[in-house]
Length: 189
Ligand code: GAR
Image (cartoon, rainbow, N blue to C red; front, side):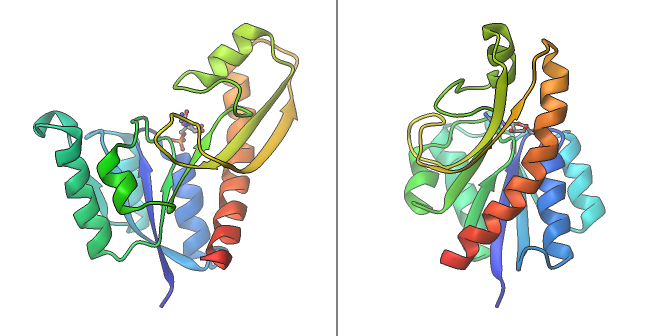
């Protein structure tokens, strides 16, 4: 049986689309078993529908705690026998419940050369700092925000000061690097 992926996203979902299309085309030898989204109304939900990928959409406010909604997520992942969880613009810190259940099986993509510029505004922070070499990092997820061991990085030069342009340049790299890196990890699972 093919390996089963879960992709977590909160927004546009271009990385989700890149991963799901790579699976459908056989470029990644796995299925996206489920897309998990914490933002009802996010564009990624429509992308999942278009690609025929099941979505688990939840509203954190409707649960008494992070542990409670993560317990629901774990049930979904267990039912789908998920081998690898890929965070792709999931703008929420992963808590103990999910980390314990999927220990060593969660990866994240981040739009900076970690350990520089952690957090939700990495590109804007890097531009404000005057950075000239930007990059993308894929890392294992642990309890420390953007702090897990680095799996892959790719850098690109940019001398300007437009965060939108950095996002645009970075996303082209993200889509390639995420597919390549998932393939490498799946070979080792
Ligand atoms: C990506 O650029 C990803 O690196 C970033 O969110 C974007 C999601 O884009 N993630 C973070 O900033 C995590 N700290 P997408 O919804 O188009 O895939």
